[in-house]
Length: 220
Image (cartoon, rainbow, N blue to C red):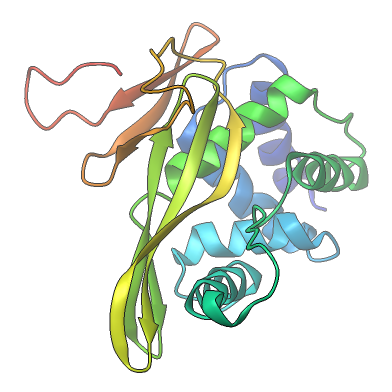
């Protein structure tokens, strides 16, 4: 690592430590560590997926297509269908802290990792899911009283005929940011399929806001 690279990585690392990180910082940080995370699968795959906006066919894309295939073959399965997140909180925490350790930096706390994942969720909203050059779904931002989620919606085709759409969580983080009333007893999330959400930081506190499309746009 040369001195300039170290200076840049340390700049964003200090933002982590001081709880001043926002989604734009996260994007820049992922670019900086992308070449240093190749031995850490989950961080390397997330960085690649964020930077290519799903255009590079890597592990995250494979996960999305595999999940879609499971839904398409649901009637042929003898067991209950369970779709896990592409990477768990523990995997991401261990991954990012390994990258930092390789840079001789101290690991992040659970709260700091949660902020990191929340920013990644925001960065990945509206990414198109494609197969053989055709759009088959999209990722979008969702939030419930306890969780922030990156949701996937994909079309399900059986025998060459579109049957329905399936929705499932791809990444999740704790909602430490905004008080939201539960929609129902299951705490079903609010979906933002069309609106654009941005993760900003005001005075060391992450805020979830709509991207202003008019003067009256407001915080969630």
